[in-house]
Amino acid sequence: MQNTENRFKEAITNKEFVVTCEMIPGRGAGEPSQEKEFAEVLKIWETGLVHAISITDNPGGNPALLADAVGVEFASKGMTPLVHFTCKDRSRNQIQAQLYALQRQGLSNILVMTGDYPVGGWEGRSRPSFDLDPIQVIMMSNDMNEGLVQKSPRGDYQEIAADFFAGAVVNPFKYTEGELIPQYHKLRRKLFAGAQYIITQLGYDSRKLDELQRYVKELGYDVPLIANVFIINAGAGRLMRKGSIAGCHISDDFFAVLEAETKHEDKGKAARYERAAQMVAIAKGMGYNGVHIGGHGITVEGFTGILERAEELKDDWQELARKMCYGEPGGFFYYNEAPESAGFLLNDNELAPRVERVRGSKIMRGYGISRLFHHLVLTRDKAFYGILKAIMSNRERKKGMNRHHVIEHTAKAFLYSCQDCGDCGLETSIYSCPMSYCPKNQRNGPCAGSMNGWCEVYPEERYCIWFRAYHRLKKYGETEKINKYITPPNNWDFYETSGWSNYTHERDNAAHRIMLDEEN
Image (cartoon, rainbow, N blue to C red; front, side, top):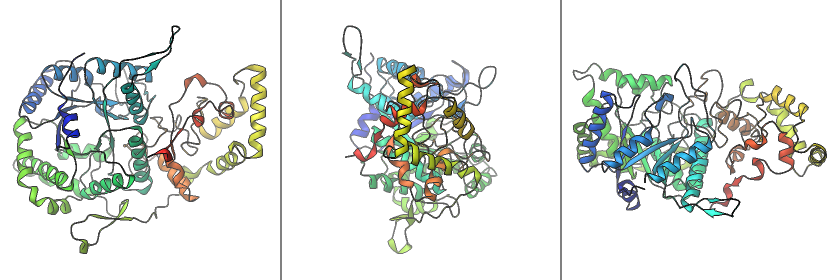
């Protein structure tokens, strides 16, 4: 195994202000454009101003050079890699195998995220695979840090402990109540699972950065927060507004600024770099633990120029923060805006009113009958549950694990487009099947890609299931139910067996949930 200096982990541990530089490997294995970018990244590293080179993993859902391979190459040159580790395109066995490979190469810094839905591939779109979510991968990596215990015919043995330094992402740049609150609830799960640092998704709103800090503090976590700084032009902004690059927020007002900058003599280059420097100064002034700087075609001169200019602006960060608030007019914030009399405060600690109301068949269809059935039949202290349990036990005594469940599957297929996974997640996602209605099969909260409540993959056609879940519960005053536990991954041993039988025999995910009220 390689032994490499981990400048990134050491800086975070020592509470230094960390700086990472993002690079995108792109398609191909040795294209001229790749070689040029790799050489520039090495120059940036050699300035000594960077604590890690952050390497993306198939961004945009397109195939690209594997981040792991680039990380190994960079480590061999003395650089500290931060490998983006997405949950897409891999089964859990492949995820574990990939973590083993990273462990063997001595690459311990990983940034875990859901990943973009595949949009391209050889001879057509790739089949999506989202077997685990970021929470589950973080838990797996932490288990590996303890040394996994494996069973064998000769007895149990413990693997060599890993040393993963796993972080996660969050998107505070959501401006609907039904998107933001589930996003923060998922962050709570990531922190509970053991995320050791958090990097924001992309937005240009200082008030949201302040909001995130307040929320994490309210939870009682002292986790390093790193702000995303992207050197953006109008072309990238246009793609982000359309949703072609998921997890980013570009408001109409901000896009107008970007378009106006294209009319400058330098096509807006100086303005882009000045904005990036302002964002670095704002993040540092607000007390963020670092910045994650990215942008296409970034050079060593541009990178060092951003950091030098940020240092010059450090005393002006409050004024800059007030101006860098490109949110949505009337958009939702978790906390109320602070009054001008409060001095420099973007938010106060009072929760903003929860007044968003979303109704209609696309939100509530089928939920009433699902709710009633769950209350009467699937609630363990109700009489009908005892009857269901007796029926399921009787069937299993006669025929083994129940594969004869035509009535159950037919009803679920009609109501929820059931995929017959047997490890039913309907209750978890408030009766929108995560296997059928969520393209990324998310059982522990939303990905970052939704826009105005709509699914990243099916905009204006299908609501995000977690947006639906929030508003379904809100109608009944039960939104706290969405934030009670972590759901384990789907157990495919139960495929095409009765979900009811697995539930009443307490062997499905409901019996193995991790309750968040166990937090210290």
